Image (cartoon, rainbow, N blue to C red; front, side, top):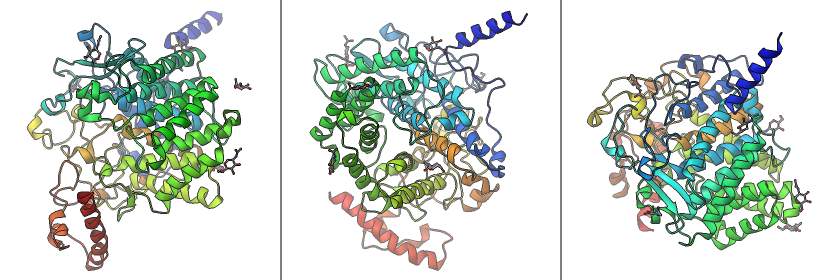
Length: 581
Ligand SMILES: *[C@@H]1O[C@H](CO)[C@@H](O)[C@H](O)[C@H]1NC(C)=O
Ligand SMILES: *[C@@H]1O[C@H](CO)[C@@H](O)[C@H](O)[C@H]1NC(C)=O
Ligand SMILES: *[C@@H]1O[C@H](CO)[C@@H](O)[C@H](O)[C@H]1NC(C)=O
Ligand SMILES: *[C@@H]1O[C@H](CO)[C@@H](O)[C@H](O)[C@H]1NC(C)=O
Ligand SMILES: *[C@@H]1O[C@H](CO)[C@@H](O)[C@H](O)[C@H]1NC(C)=O
Ligand SMILES: *[C@@H]1O[C@H](CO)[C@@H](O)[C@H](O)[C@H]1NC(C)=O
């Protein structure tokens, strides 16, 4: 009597072609839920909710025809003609940030980062009951990347013109046309974009195939599917061949597609070649690919780089991955202790000082230049890599110091900062109210995006915003994109970190301590100091003889001012160095 029902259930599972989504679905709770303590334990329900919200953000960014399982009720089908200009179906995928372009290079990085994280700390997704949504998010990305990889040596790297950002502010039903499709191909290559996509496919193939690096970690999220893993691997191999042997040679992708250089110009391709070769070496059990990756490290002098880890610069992740694989498979001929030393030189520079980053007064890891737009991203990516590296560290003191440093950066992002604001939308009553997102704002007056409408129409739950300025000030202005924009890659490191905390942390995320109103009482006057606004930098006064314009900093006590003088002196020196060199 039950047999037909069982068959029906099995059939519907197959129709999903993926891990079945929970019924009823997970939905974000009102921000007020983030202001009360959980009952602790593992998994901690606050960390689990945060992980769920971080994934929910991606669902809000979906392009194309939305499935019946769509949880973001204020989203509509959109951009349904993408690809028609090249007679292909390029619908789907994700909008990159607060606007409506689709960008392959940062998407590839995002997906690579999340798959790598879900291979190491994947049981955190399982414990939080978020693995079905992780699978859903990854497939929405990877299925689109497969469409974008339209032929062996063709990869679409952008859909829609970047100018869209400056000319259209409105909802998902009025996105203007045309939306041109931009490609790299055999004669007009893009080594970085092809290798970056290869790295994403290979990293995710490892996850779907259950190819774990080591049992120092929790193990992968339970979404394994050998068929899907094999398909991903095929794309990875083809794209890597495209990257290494296009007849047009090797070059950065904006050389072939200048339009793609407007928002996401790449600084080089040696790091993408190396990381793609590494993930592929693991996927195919190939010591020669591992050796090839070591060759790229030498050839492109990657060891001399000590800056940020992000969509452009993958180098800081390489020693960690080299060490993980060398340790897991000594037959590849890698020397785990050599890579350990390289990784620790970089991490020591962050944690003990000596690297190009420094800590703001409030404790945020900050890199002049890179952090002037989306300051939390360098910090959270460093925290993510440090956390992942901890089990490999050579000394107990490093294990402690790296983990504590990473936790402090995470706490900063979650509200332990001078603004007493957690920088995830909808996490707590003090979260940002004005993310730079055309869709969430509900406005359509591009010349008045800050005030029209006065309150954003929709809460963009789970979005990590850009972050504060170098003076730890967050102004919560919609037009201040360096501070308030949201983006696919901003959420990526926080996902891996949250998965780790779900596994390992009985204490709540910092924001549960923040009652409604803390941010309002700290909210700064005046204007920020970042790439969109320099009004609040106070720079000219400082650089001309070190005079300090006290008037621009309201409400400071005398003691604080004295401690700031030394700090500002350092910043002003650094600025002059920037100008000189
Ligand atoms: C595995 O993935 C393939 C490709 O997406 C899909 O067709 C198949 O149904 C999946 N199998 C399971 C058991 O989910
Ligand atoms: C989706 O469509 C509805 C109905 O027209 C509209 O109210 C809503 O704002 C749209 N969503 C976006 C993101 O534009
Ligand atoms: C190859 O890519 C270039 C740069 O995007 C483009 O101009 C050209 O039309 C493409 N070639 C083909 C055959 O589509
Ligand atoms: C990887 O290759 C080595 C050497 O060829 C072999 O001994 C080992 O069994 C392979 N591992 C896997 C998982 O296939
Ligand atoms: C790895 O390199 C270190 C020096 O960094 C050396 O002492 C050690 O012998 C090497 N190990 C192997 C297995 O080659
Ligand atoms: C997680 O907890 C285990 C056991 O308490 C510990 O050994 C491990 O180092 C922790 N990992 C991280 C990344 O905190």
